[in-house]
Each structure stands twice: as C-alpha cells, then as structure tokens.
Amino acid sequence: MPKAQETLLEIDLKALEHNLAYLKSRIQPTTKFMAVVKAYAYGNAAEAIAKHLETLGVDYFAVAYTYEGEQLRTAGITTPILVLHPQAISFNALIENCLEPNLYSLKVLKAFITTAESLKQTDYPIHLKFNTGLNRLGFSEADIPEIISLLKNTASVKVVSLFSHMAASEDLNEKPFTLNQIDAFNSISELILKQLHYKPLLHMCNTSGILNFPEAHYDMVRSGIGMYGFGNSEKENIHFKPVSTLKTVISQIHHIPAGQSVGYNRAFKSDAPIVTATLPLGHADGIGREYGNGKGFVAINGQKAHIVGNTCMDMIMVDITNIDCQEGDEVIVFGDYPTAEEFAATANTISYELLTGLSQRIKRIILK
Ligand SMILES: *Cc1c(COP(=O)(O)O)cnc(C)c1O
Image (cartoon, helix red, strand yellow):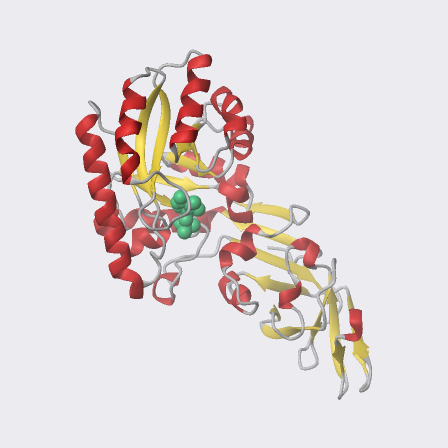
C-alpha cells in the first residue's frame, strides 16, 4: 500500500474472508450463517462488504432498519435480508424491497399482518424474536397462544425463523445466565413448533455466542463483530484479522516551548518543551472528545503518540516529542496496532462504538 496522504479507512476484504472462514470453522457445515451488516457494516462500507460476502455465499444478511435493507437492495444484493428493528411506518417499503421483518410484539405482528394482507401477500417471510433475558426487544412466552391464533387466522405470513439474543455471551462469568437463556429459548421454540405444521429456523448466537456456546448454534448463527475482526476476548482475538485500518497523516509539526498551551480551552499546558503533530481527524470523524487529553494514542512509525489537549472537530494534536517523524508521515489511528479495541479502550468504550461511529466523510478504500 502507498502511504496515506489524507485520512482513509482501508477495508481489507481478504481479512473479511479470513474471519468468515474462521467463524465457519467454529460451526457445523450445515449451520447457516447470517452476516450482520447493520450500521454500514459496522462503519466499514455496507455495499462493498455485503457484495463480497454474497460472493462468498452467506445465507442471510441482517440490518437494523428498513432503510439499510433498501440500500442493499438498490446495490443489487439478492440474498434474504432480515430487518432486526423495523418500525410499522416502514412496512410497505419493507415488503416492496423483499426485506424480512423481525416481529417482536403482538402490536407489530398485528400491524405487519394488516400491511401484508392489504398488499395481498401470501406466506410473506417473517421472523419472530423472543425475549429470554436481554429485556430489550421480543415477545414473551405468555404471548405464544395469541401469536399462534394470529398466524392461524391469516395466510399472509409465514414464520421463517424463531430467534432470541444473548445478553452476555462474551462474559463467561455470566455463563449460568446465558445457559438459562438457552433453556428458555428451547422451551419457547418447542411450544411453537408443536403448533406450527412447518419448521422455522432457530437461531440465538451472535459472535461471542458462536465462540462460547456451540450447544446453542441451532440452525443458524448471526455474526457482526467477528467478521470485522474482533473476538471479544484476548484468547479469540488472535484468530481474527481487523478488516479496517484507520490511517491519517501529519499535517503540521509544532515545537511548543514550556509554559504554552495546545488547543481549545488551553486544555493542555506544557511544563516542559514538547513537539506536537496536528492530524486531520476529529470528533466530526468519530474520534470523540473522550479520547483527548492524553487518553487516546495513535501509532507513528510504530510508536505511541498520545493525544494532547481537547479533540477538535476536524483535528487532533498528538505528542511526538520522542518520535522521529516528519510532516507528511503516515499515522495509524487503529489497525494492527493499536487495534480498534485497544484504541476504544482508551476512552472506556468498545470496538463496536468506535467503528460504527466513524463518519461517512472518511474516505473508504476497498482492498481486494
Ligand atoms: C447486532 C446483532 C448481532 C451481531 O452481534 P455481534 O456481537 O456483532 O456478532 C446479532 N444479533 C442481533 C439481534 C444483533 O442486534
């Protein structure tokens, strides 16, 4: 790769392939794979990622909102797409784009049946989500009789899958809790399967569920963060390759004498002379103020350069006092080192938030 001369997010499709192959090595060959590409494929580039995953033969895509699914259809994606959190206002658009809704309450199930009937649909694919402990979105077990009666009274929809979501699959201290969730999902799906004359797919695991709970893979697994290079633990991270590398460049170097300040609000004051580099990347790009004032660091020629003072909208200043570098040199914000997980941790957050918060104004470069 030529050195970056501006801020770039490089997206390595080979790394994506590697991660997918690793995740698939952890499931049975017959288990289906749902690739979660919500939030622009976790900040990467939904279209390029989904197209590549489609050529690699994933079984399903998942997005959060209808509009994200519409964008994938416009880009030519033909694989089934589950919309994890659709709102009733978007049900017409959802059906027009052959997207499949997650229905999670009697209210949304009824609303969807009404829309499907009004559009003269038969057996329109739907997915039912059950709450087994996350307490976020999902039917409860007590809803089952009414779900069944609604389904028996319409020909407009057909249940493609029953699913649930784990609350703490990455945390083995919470293993008993997760096992309880699995038990709850088993009894819920048993109750429903008894009353349907066909068998929907069952699924429960996200990335950490895939890695930690092989007994809960069922018919399909859903992975997001793992595909993008993170296993949510040191033990697993070594098997994954980060898909994205955020690079930038040194715009200007300043020699700051003792007694001066750097940046807005004079948040940094030097008690000894320091050298700073100004980089074209700021909170408008998704590098928030929490990273400022010595917390976050980037790598310049492999060495740590901590952020000095407050993060500005379009710039940060970093301390290069002990680093041999020049204006125009490349800077790694995250990638192999520091990783997005390490960088995120400096601001007490997680790779998910850092990646999905990267602004669309950062140029994406797809490496094939
Ligand atoms: C986002 C999401 C996933 C993906 O989780 P990862 O931890 O990124 O693998 C899976 N299932 C549901 C319901 C989600 O909302």
